[in-house]
Image (cartoon, rainbow, N blue to C red; front, top):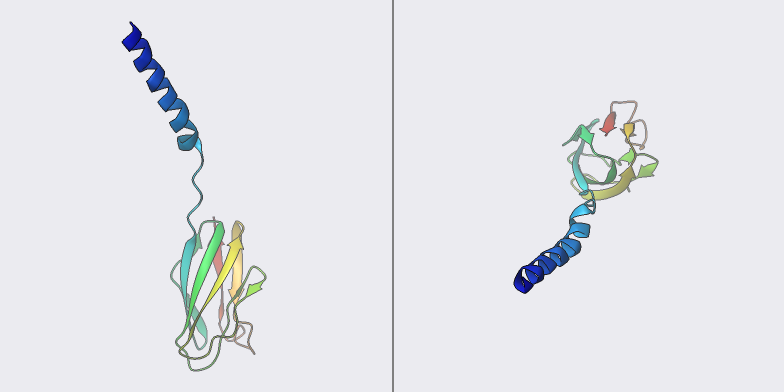
Length: 116
């Protein structure tokens, strides 16, 4: 009887220690979106992302500088052939993005990202 009680006690203690860890919600994994810039368009690797922290990896394959702006945040100007990064925490919705340099957005460097 003592062995059974001891085994049950050990099993109960293990459940108490493991249960809170298992019940914790896991942190949402950060999302990465690759953004390719050219005259005068963006190509994003994803059209839809989950809300939360999103890292935009920017590559300018064009011949003139471009930047990337979304949700009130803007990257630095990325020179031709160079790369950059913009990290933004996004809320749910349809968020417009654009290049803020000169008339680039008017020439087609804009779009909408869906955040779920």
